[in-house]
Image: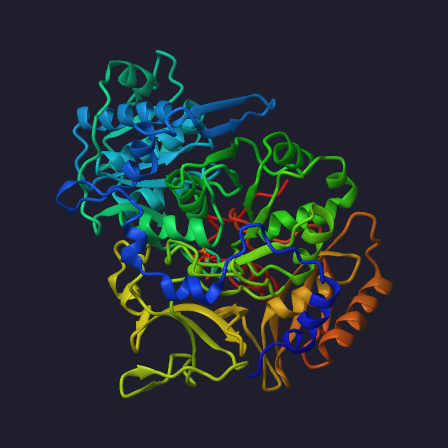
Length: 599
Ligand code: ATP
Ligand code: MG
């Protein structure tokens, strides 16, 4: 299979159109940066602890609280009514020390797991960092999970402590408590002096506590975080991360997000997903910047108000959010002063070239796509500050990261020669793989050793994604291994088809799957969500099919287009193509614990 046709002609055209893709102010030199980089040098930017210890909480909070950044805002929480609660580095450190002390008093041991089921409120951030400071392992759950996904994850993780609210406890946890014998303590952040039966009042415990002065001297390879994957391809896996991941959070914060001390930074992801922890908590704090947290859910005008009102300089968001802003129209952005903004990055799903150019035209800045996974713990491939953006590409590997596209055999496994995997040539499609050894690399899927082992072959970590690489070393996402469509001898990546559909003015978002066909093997079917004002109907359907044929050719364009009110997404914002497919074929729907409940 050759690389997506978009790449040959498409991005050149877009680049011409986007001639003013402005270089970010801190533009640096890609090759020079890569050549100069070592993980040891990155590690030396951090403090460390005696006896070779390394603890994320020390690097993110404690070291700043005792230095010149002590009075700087570490976190700014924007409440529903727009009020802002700011925590300085020293105040955050105090709360983190108190939470660590509470765990100690409760007898929670080093390495035991502390879960949270909380919205994005200050208590969640103090619990996360306090747990790390105490040497225990933190596992954030998304606060909209129902009882089943909560039970499933607490059981896998053997959770000892759960921090939550009264309402969430009553509605989602009380009924499953008897299934969780290992869960010793439930701490309510809002018990207000009268905790529910079998729970403790966290405020009372914090009031009685004396802050733990110093972080536990955890070893760099000691467990710190447990993160469940998004469940896009099936049952979520619990990826285990260690304290030295903070070295990668520092490095990627600097190179991929271009963080500088004076920045006001906003990551829109929830800490229930790895992005919301690695880049919503750890990376910004390690850099000593001010991180904005929106306590509410996505709302177009609210988001623009936050960007403008907080003078956000660096913004890290996701394609699904950008598509919602695009759908709402440029006028909504024009009503706000976004002049403080200097860098925008996106992750989670392929970023359509349309969105990159829209960013430039409407927000005044192109969007920098980057790629990584729960398993990688941090950004691996990015259109980062030191290089030109190629719209539609995920970018190039970060300093310290070696990536390759590997040849796959008939069984879809990488082809090995003398025990080594074989890379494909430029422009060819294969499995995206990374050379193990970066610090935020996951160290296992909890309780699934065999599944973990299967992620490695011929000296590489296999990502499960298909991609190609061009002559200049830029990587292009093609699709997840399972989503790729095989039609009349062609391999078709859903992303390419979805991106082409989104170029049609009536299309807001598209999800593309393969449906069985006696002649072609599979044919392409697209589910399309329309922009406000577009009229669904036979004329538009044919027009969209014709439009896609012109862009993609008859072999790749969808044969069928179905209009839907809303595409199914995971709660982390990814199109759930496997659900579209299961529904289309009348098959079991599989694990839907991460399905977003749409209004
Ligand atoms: P699961 O592993 O449970 O099926 P998931 O893979 O969606 O879920 P995450 O770890 O949250 O869980 O997502 C990582 C995946 O998201 C990547 O493997 C890739 O498929 C996709 N992805 C992330 N960023 C990008 C990007 N910039 N471009 C294309 N795909 C991306
Ligand atoms: Mg995955």
